[in-house]
Length: 132
Length: 504
Image 1 (cartoon, rainbow over the protein chains, first blue to last red):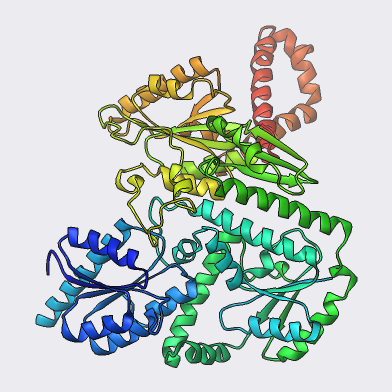
Image 2 (cartoon, each protein chain N blue to C red):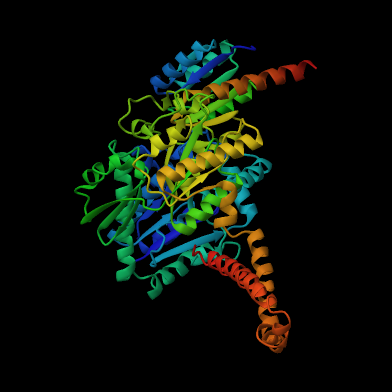
């Protein structure tokens, strides 16, 4: 956990998943990318993930709904929302509903790298406080 | 014909009021959300601007440029709508758009907090407690947004023509009142207000064209328009864009003449590390505003620290690349090299200067005064050169000596006035210390004049009477000392008084 984690990416644009997967795998993380949020939710039931990176505007289940459902079932998961339609209101709504971070597209790879690092630190500190 | 601009806090009923008014008048509606979506399609990174209000932006974030584009896009679109006839616009900060157009009716709303909490809880599916917290944060963000984009206080009453308190009046009645107001002579277009719409449109369209065209996207340009004449001002070291500007603006409807001018009054500020929060930055800004000057930044990296890949022309080529013509990446962009190396606060300072409309260019050089001169050779049209904090790794005495040597060398070669940041305040600005000095010197001058006029007999006796006869040498010596002393005191007082009224 100290160096890498399990990350699930959901974005209906395949290129986003491809680019993020390539970057994060290079950093040593285990990554799975999905273009369908319903399929991604099913995968969460069968496989452990630490971090979910999701787009907001998607087909049947949008990013905010996905956030609700993920946090309802898996409170330990850090959800990072990304969108090309970022507004102040949407960013605040996401954070109020428990998102770990909100990133507006377009973003640099370094930004997601920094967010993942912060999410990992937060998971580690939560785990250590749970042990004590 | 009327332009109604409705602005309010989140969930305060601006959309509902706009719809009620549209129902009564049949005027078309335009929302900020609609315009923002259209702006995104043009490649303007509005999401980055919005999120910057709640997160600390990256060092490399070029928000000032994005802000300019956002405002230009909104202005151009609203001006086009205004040409077609009456319309209603609603959205965050709407009352601050189209500045100077006298026939717009600027409307604000005040809505009871409990109503807003209920509406927010319902709209977002939050508990009332969470909705209260959400509104508190979003209201603070709204305040920050208005301050960042429009540089005013969102609650300043002088920016509104009417504010409705929805605790006491219903939306339908508020809409009815707005109908009457919009018909008043004060809100009818005049020749001057229509001309203002045309000028705003032309300036905004020119800005958009220049910013979105790859030939000029990297330039830092100031654009103004008046009666079909577009004036584009570029910093001296970006003169290579001069030929591209008329090409990009060619065939722009309504543009009869394009004037490309180089910024004439320039302050060159040389320093190792820049910080927009620092005192000397505020002093430079004060001076630049007083003189109407642009500030050119030059970061000097001492040779022992090495330049790496930092030194270069510092033209922002990333801007052009990352917009419409770039390879599609789904919004996941490769890292910008600028985010990796330590830029010594150059980007943040540049962003702040751009926001203030005072940016005159930037350079990064490695070495000593020879490198500085080499870089600015040929651009030496400076009103002032300010040498800021330099040679920071050296001790105090070495730093002072080397700074002085650098100032002398630059002065000799550039033939421009050169001062250090420490001298700047005492010589060019009016602060508390200068205020005290002025009061003190003025008191001494008044005392001296008072003494002279109330002791005339004694004075004549001293100059040519009995006193002079008894002490022949004393009066010429006293006069020799008194006249320059009085001239110095009076000269300082008048010099400081002129500084107050911005005459140097």
